[in-house]
Image (cartoon, rainbow, N blue to C red; front, side, top):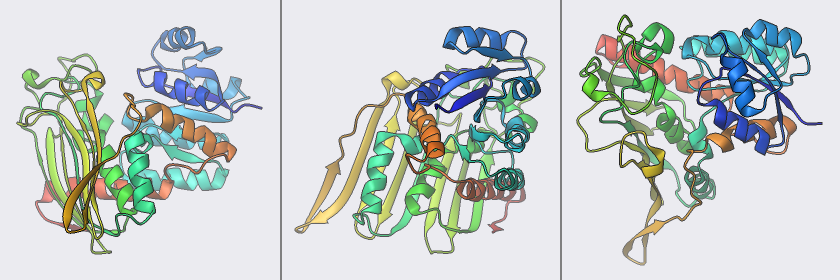
Length: 360
């Protein structure tokens, strides 16, 4: 029997979740969204049998559900995940995992009590470039990664003004928490080491300047709030002796949008990168996957050729959730990794606010 999934949230990410779940052989039987008419519209568009305007109604009436996917503003990730886990459903939650590490701990407790799987959409792990690089790392080609640099930077990429993205109470923060993918990917490559210290600075330059608005996002709200950072820079040291530097921005004086992890290992270095011609437009992007080695006294740069993947692994990530439930594949991420990531993000914001390093 196929795994039956319900989706909470009828926004744009539904297209990728739907494609991934169906690719893995699951059936999407319900969608819920609190906005009047949104669920019904999505159900018609994506061929989903049942539509609800509340999560309570979906869980009560769609009793056949095995799993739930959560695609809503960040504030609601933890409470909805806990509600669904308590209802005996597997949960696939959009990033970030929650607003804080403490909320992730509560999600993990609910998952452990229910015996159900809890996963997050760290979709960049599912990109062909990332999978290929991780295979080299796991195969010993790289040796030990001593240092890495994680970067997701935009020049004009603020996702609207006054909406939930720029309202800290709803989002938890700006680009650090929104664009956490490269921090996660770097940690994934590094073996998710235990963090020791974090030092960071955030900047709110341009956060209300509409000249820095991105070509996507949600409509502006004139009466809304813009109280998150526009850019952040930081460094994380680990108990293993490894070090990570990071840069995340929606609006910063750079040449163009760049999404990358670069690392230096004891046997090889490497880079996984996506460069955009125009901010946020996947169809104009150029993907690169490279290894840097010394051979026969020569510096050799290896270009790793991988299949094109415009969706940045979103479909593959959703498919992996289904395969992890049915046991046909190992999960691409774990709750413990999500907790470690949110501990680092909490510390980044704490350090930026205090101006001092934070020990973990």
